[in-house]
Length: 365
Image 1 (cartoon, rainbow, N blue to C red):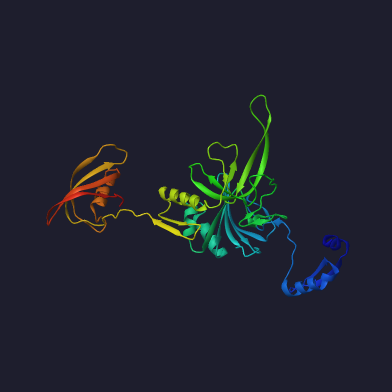
Image 2 (cartoon, rainbow, N blue to C red):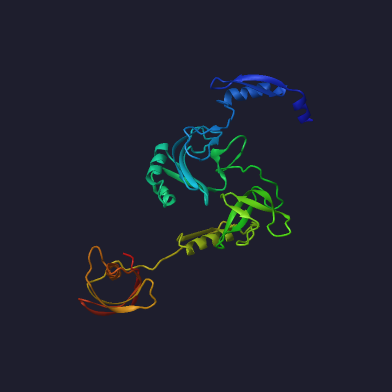
């Protein structure tokens, strides 16, 4: 009955916002004064969101957005581009100084900066380098990095597209009985490492098979909140499964441990559902930083060789080469080779002989 009353009896009203703009509204007759009071005391301004072309646009990046955007820098080539954008009216506390990057393989990524000047400086310093994504987080003014993959960054939303976190909600998504928006899944990558991801939606694709007789087949593409996509035709990875209650910490622990094994970290922290916390840290063997002057019996293997060489080395420490491992590696580089393995079996210093029951060193200078 409330809905019938609301649409069968209404009244128009007008109010001036804090910035002096006259606004016309329509509501139930008994709510006119409430709406007018709300606008007068809580609303500074109201603007209609219109999709427009990015100002000073150069290149072939995204050309339209419903936000007021100015392009300050641009470079492109092949299947990718990079550009510095200033979003002058970011909504809901979002940040307005970004460097957006796109390539045909990894998709879209953007970084946020404290000021537009710092974003431009970062662009000028590294836009053409291969280690761009590794260098940017080390620069002054860097705030954070967001990998969008196939998803569209929030600042490139057009029309009535809704924002979901850092992304524009994908258009034309379809209902799926299993892969629903917001539901979390355990997704395994090609190397077998699991990760917990939230579903952003699904698209069903129709196509004709290539084999005879041809027939129409339907497959789905599932979009995740990190910008990645799962194709249900894929046979190289496990099928995503819903995340069950109580197993969140198990999946996260396995993912973090795999990262340690891959050399991408040294610490592990697991938060259990009962409030307990487990912490672990990878401890590497301590390496000797300096040796006394003397004679050292070493066993070495040159990179690319399967055989070992051994013998005595006369060593005198210097500031540049304070230990035997660095000294032997230096001699090998002068001969155009690289030491992959080194072990000191025993040594004799000037103070007298002393047995050494096997000590390993890294030949890295």
